[in-house]
Length: 268
Ligand SMILES: [Zn+2]
Image (cartoon, rainbow, N blue to C red):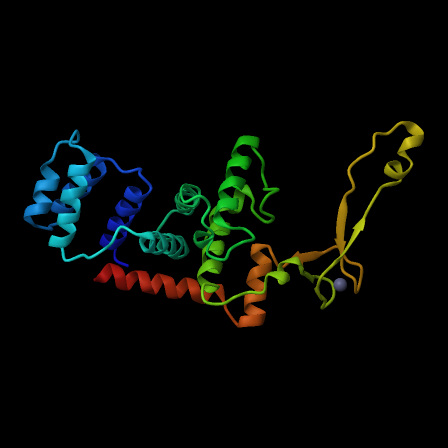
């Protein structure tokens, strides 16, 4: 997708989500004239007043697209394309990660959480990341409880990795049961961990000294060696390892491919 196509799709998406105003379209037309595009309809659109009704402005916008030889329809396919392009843009470093996450989150919530837009990242989908970022900001927390592995210091990398995972898994169906599995960092075990309730002596004997009862805390252990040093397949790091081992997919290669892809688009 070229820069121009992305801009146009973003405007159409704004229109579908009913977030567009005349100014958005007029400013876009002005910027296109500045970029050297020409056309009667484009010039008319660029010359409209911001106070022009959105119906009239969108009318000129669609005429302008026709004039440019661009045939898009205002339909859900555009939403799909746009969501995918946002993710590719984040992965390739063209879109600022946080900004991309907020745009995706907006798309999900405005489309009533249509599962098509979470693009198979059901564990740490972008909406969860958006929630996690908000909670970290509000609570001034250094790491996220919602997204294991997400920390204040690795936000951008975490989002980019998630985008690359999304791109890598687009055409494969990962069995959902693997997300309950772990890799043991001590031995070679991979599979479902055992969950144990761990209680300190004072939690067990607390009733003797009037210690309040606490909710049960489960901890996961390797059934093979008993280690608690585990990497959950559902985390970003776990998914990276899983993709490499099972599908031979290396995210670094996906990143290079998307950057190369991007260069080609910019050249056009
Ligand atoms: Zn183990």
